[in-house]
Length: 158
Image 1 (cartoon, helix red, strand yellow):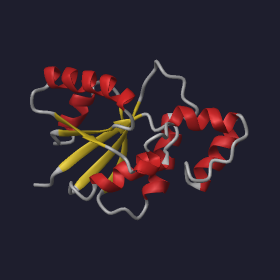
Image 2: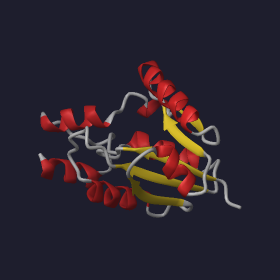
Image 3: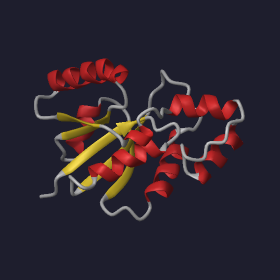
């Protein structure tokens, strides 16, 4: 039986911070499913299909990584994939309160699902998709934040 972890998120857009978490997680788990959430409350730059395609391109060549999307509760999705683990990235202390609250809620919804918090490399600890989109909208060079093809896709959207 494979040890499977789910890394859910909006990934709008994928950053080097996300990629760092994926690479760290695949060292621990046999399989990591990066799952793009459908979230009607957010106004994403990229639709779900576009985010899935960008993730597939950026993770091509990383053995054991699968890209998918889901709707509904993450704990239900985790169970549907025969997993018991949710991976969440923590960049700064400001992420902790929200992530801790979500982890406790998920635990209440399903005692079988555990949340593992992973920190990205220090080089990416400040990155956020929101910050990237804002910088791009102001004409910033995104080299060092996202892969070149992601930068190109962001700028084409703006």
